[in-house]
Amino acid sequence: MYNPSAAFSSTTGSGGGAGGGSSGSSGGSGAASGAFDGGALSPTPQYIYHEKQESLLCGQHALNNLLQGTYFTSADLAAIALELDERERALMFAEGVDTPEAIAFAAEDSGNVDEYGNFSVSVLQEAVQRSHGLSLDPTDERVQAVLRDPTCEEAYVLNHSSHWLTVRRLHGQYWDLNSMNDRPEHITDFHLGAFLAQLHAEGYSIFSVRGDLPPPVRDPALGKPGCLYTVAELAARAARGGGGRGGGRKPPKRRYDEDAAMEAALKASMAGVGGGGVGAGGGDGDDDLAMALAMSMADESGAGGGAPAAAAAAAPAA
Image (cartoon, rainbow, N blue to C red):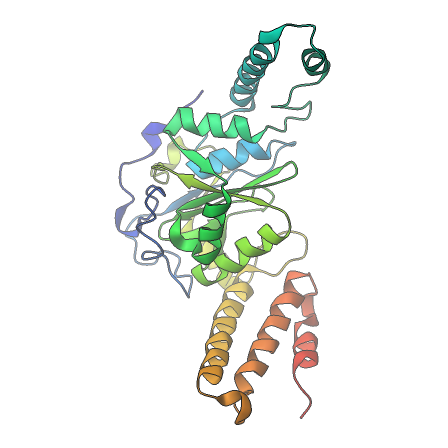
């Protein structure tokens, strides 16, 4: 197993925030809740490691993107899967090889890796425990805490069916490190809650990463070619309106603009309710909120230029 520890430093510098998620002490204090500043104040380049999808190895990519380096190969994870299979076989055969359960177990394929390279959660949990003493907590209690305060953790690993992806705070800001994306995608603190809630509603399991995470890569010479991006270049691309998620979803910059608009609309709506505006001509906040939500949903569904029309449809008639 290749361990690129020399590529990392024990601190993240002034733009840090990649420390462990076990205590949740940073709780959003270092992450920008509004504009994507691109690390403009950092005297040195801030790197983000992001592996893109190869075959069906999203589990491998999710772990390497979480740890910010080439820590695991498919062979490493396959070896762990084989070891777990052997443990399970020993337990199952402890009562004899001719029991109905043992016979049924012997006839099954591996439950920890399939022929396409999809790895089980047990493999991923064992891998990060061995390499960095981390744990992946999927308990309902933890998930509910995360949905209430998504900035309480430094990183998340999410799974649905056979797809794995990672979200992690790096250089004081959260990033969607899904291997299906062309590049890392910035997520504001405000948008993170909606992002996790949407995936949870779609059936994704949310695993809080507990323990001390390694800091981001500091020496690009030791990184895997084609997998390193600087925060500055990602910010510049977002400012140009390029890139973003695949599948026709909106470019990053529009997402950041809409986050700010929706946050303002939510505040206006809540202020109107708190001040008795519902019955006293204070409905403008609700109208703004409806328009912001309609714009967001139109873009998230790949409607492209349909956002203005959706917003107009959401607004009440004069």
